[in-house]
Image (cartoon, rainbow, N blue to C red; front, side, top):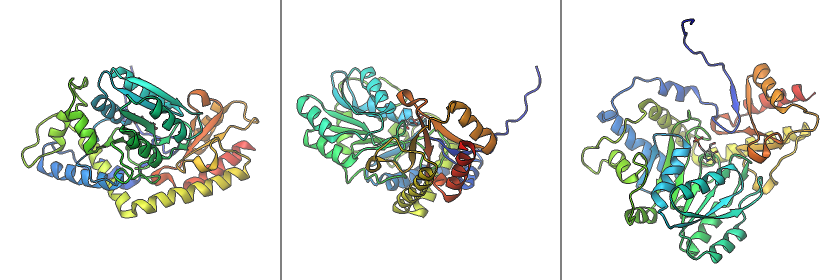
Length: 375
Ligand code: PLP
């Protein structure tokens, strides 16, 4: 067997559904020396990360911290802590990730009442209201704010208001929305929210910021059954992330360097300003949209429901082998765009403009590469 040598990743431009391009500043932070996860310096960093995440989520929730695992673990943290056997959860599905929410509810012993919308459309508030009325026993509403599988943005503010009117808690997937479009956890009354490091925060994958409000914490405290996941049990994790004036107790070994990277990406977001970051995503989306239109490409999602950071376009009939087309983008232009997921496989491409990657430079590269290969 030949001796293995060090891995040198190719230099790509990442314009798929995530991970997105990571700026050098964040990569440099990741490469700083590892220190102990209970080192006082690391504990100071943990406090700063929590404060920066509160800013990013626009919340004063004390229980705001990064789960040491990818977005799917943030999703599970919300469901395993909030859903108890016997609970009824209204789950909205308008793409791939709503389907995962259903799986989570059922694995927690709950009943999922599905509100279905077409892939490529926002969640319908009218359907959600009808489901809430038809199921007074429901105590949670769960939905995806920004459906990465389709590029549709749902009206989280209205959906949360409907949930509150019917005494339901909300679990919101903000994996792709955080940092890319307006998200106001406190103003909209979101009870539990999770995100991911690898989308509009421009950080490497593997960390999931979460936040829980008082009503969610009260439900967790009132549980009569143990949370079935030891690792994700908030009662235990919090003893690590909350010092409560005393010593932090060991729960798991935090991915120390990944936290340096998350911190740096959040510092960059704060420096830019959240509103400016949202505006930049919108401006870049409009530029990309105009360029795609010139190339004759059309969108899956109707304009008012489009996510600026995830642009799903219909694959033109002239492209007979879409996988070969994406391979050519990668090999000839070092450009990654996303394939369609689930029912949209082979029908759409997903072009991401996330975080640091929402730039004129990336748009020019993408349009030029598409123009060359579509010729
Ligand atoms: N939810 C949404 C909307 C996502 O886009 C993703 C990942 O793309 C996830 C959840 C899962 O996140 P991860 O792949 O980091 O586990």
